[in-house]
Length: 113
Length: 114
Image (cartoon, rainbow over all chains, first blue to last red; front, top):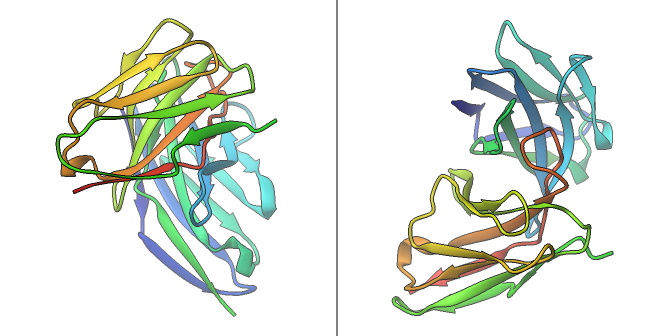
């Protein structure tokens, strides 16, 4: 079985500050990991995903995430926050050989000027 | 290329009424999904269809039925709506299920059951 835990339902940063959104997963099989972003009143769109290979994954809008198997983590970072990054972010896991994507409960990012 | 479209965008029902949420995709994807999103609970899978002609239950299927009408369309039906079904419903599609393929989401349907 797979599960995802996102630490912190709300994160606030100043514009230009580092963004760090935390995600820990549990999976009995090799995991595929995803970060999705949801802007207000919109559907979700993929930021980045880890499947196999390089553990540091770069996504859109300057975001990246690192798969750390020893820590069962897949934290999302961005060096410098922009006002347009304000949104809700979801981490998700799919176990290899399974059909279903399991989402975390989401982290709402606020960016202050 | 519209991607994934959903109708309606908003709906208010009374308890016991029925309705069908429509979803269509124009990306020639094989797999389609229905999720519900509730505050503090993330997205939970209701039903999915790995290919035309097949459907399977997800995490929270009770109170819902689905139809994969053809490769493009995947509808979600509430036969007798309950206040617990007040939620935002998202349809998604991907080229293939069971591998690492990306899911593409529609804009959502906001449903209120009184």
